Length: 310
Length: 226
Image 1: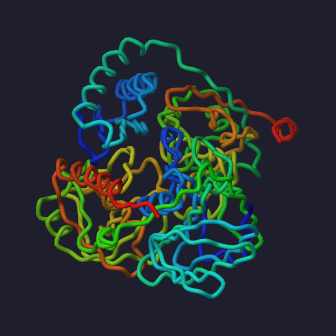
Image 2: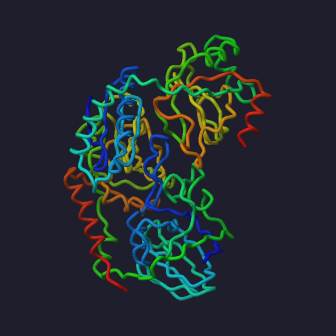
Image 3: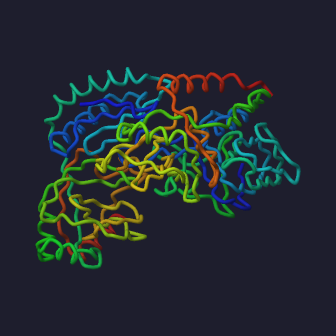
């Protein structure tokens, strides 16, 4: 079956859980900015959790189905309408042949994910279906979707769907500070500077994208003016360039960089970074490495526990 | 050698505070030793000038276990470090059209453009690491006489294959991107091809030599690759 793009929305791309194993060639992981919502959307429609799905940003797409399909929308609320009738997030929905799904502007967060039973059929490049926007490869023709694109969907191996337990939603909408651990060059900053970073409220700037979220707020400076020799950047690193305004490096980031990294977003909170919009406020809370590891393990246990058979 | 936790999913192995052949060699030796292990709990390796970032799946392996793997790889890496690196030949056309900053580099270094070309194409370079964009190789070993600061204002678009100089570094833009390096020539070779295996022409630890080619050879090679 195929899905035709009637309107592409602001920035809609095919993403899976990302491309790993190529950072030494300068290739960033790409993948869903909110990997947790991608996984849940896939699991709801009975896919493998890493199946290729659509990531829509701030303004969703309008899509036409040529055959019946089972879909699920997760992540930000984009007030999806199937042939004019509201569909909810986080639940499997049937599309009939000829139906049109219209996703609007996201009302609460930045990105929503549309999974379709069977998964989108795009070539696997370097082990992943994810679109690398800057490198122009992966996903659908290595680019964001455009009006008139026709996306192929794989035939599903099985057609069982799932539902989410009602108490799962609270966790998905968690607010509060983003948890971080110390970054590789945390000792380049005074205890005072790190404390100011942790007690300040930052605003996500308009100049933010999947490669990095630029923050505006309290400027942070290093102890002295020494220059960092370019080194590898972990996902979610928070680097501080000369101007002192931190940048969270994200899924489309450069694999190496030359600015000191004060902190790093923990793996369990990475999906929340993918849901930040320009002008959103963000605060950080420092946790221990042990707590960070426990948080990601707890998240995996939670994910295995939230589904019930539909 | 210091092993620093960089995140809940990575360790940064730092070999020193200055770029020397010795620290570069140790980064590459560890990079190769870890690559050879093909341990799928390790997701990514990011070589830098004096460090290697080891990114792993925190659900599959702990910092401590990865630390032990790194220490054992450092041992095997040292014994394998004598292996001759691959030398990759890269033809470059240094025509003024491809090297709009060649005259500036000549002026800055007090050499003629011919001398700049001769010096640039007679050195053997070390691929320190790839970064910035897919397939962009940072090359060490440029003659000191050619060191030239980068442009004050980066160009909005630098053509794929452009060869540039920034301070003591030289490198090749694999795809069209914005960039601030001084452009002195262009290679007809495709440095990055996502469909190829491997997708890049060079990787960290390789050696590179440039050879000066004329415009006709450049055009022939471009056609041969398209």
